[in-house]
Image 1 (cartoon, rainbow, N blue to C red):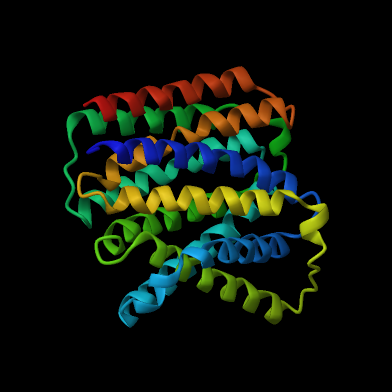
Image 2: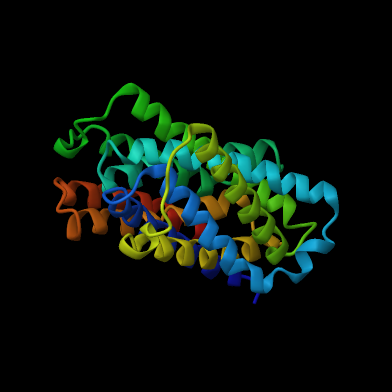
Length: 283
């Protein structure tokens, strides 16, 4: 089906939104570096059964996979730093700012069209983002300029990664990219632990069950994401708009699981964002 990639991106977005709450819960039991290492290690193990074609990939694309892994590793470090100091629902809506970066990269780097519906959609997302930042959140008492910068750097780097996905998937299979991506991320996080001489325990996988759950969600979601990028009909700008549906999951998680405040206001902001998504997709 020509538009099956839209369904793939929608499922990817819902899985991504669910992981933000899992990260917040996991941080209560383990350090961020411990989570990141085992998160990627378990993900790597899950990709091995499907990685036979990975070793036939040209060296230059293995190198590009390393670059992508380095970009995402850095983004996730910033993400955990930000998530420690803000509510899940606020983080989810702040994360929408990656749409601005992705749209700019899609238009100026990949030469994609920026139609009127897309412009309206982006404007509505920006409006929702601005509105949510007008409301003070008592659970965001640790919200400082460095935390805000960390959140924005996470968004920018993820936008760079998303643009790389579209380019790389024209030259490789999803199983190839997924294996090398997870392999290099595991190495990078392992190196970080060695440099910082931080002690970790494999037992955390037993008592912090959020880590393997996040890994499964990541592998399934990324598989769908890479397949969507391989579809010639898909566009980074439109995929970026659809991805913002993840905000609904993060807002509901903040309300139902973490009992966060101002949920109705945040739902209103998320509704504005979703309106932008529908306008962009239908246009």
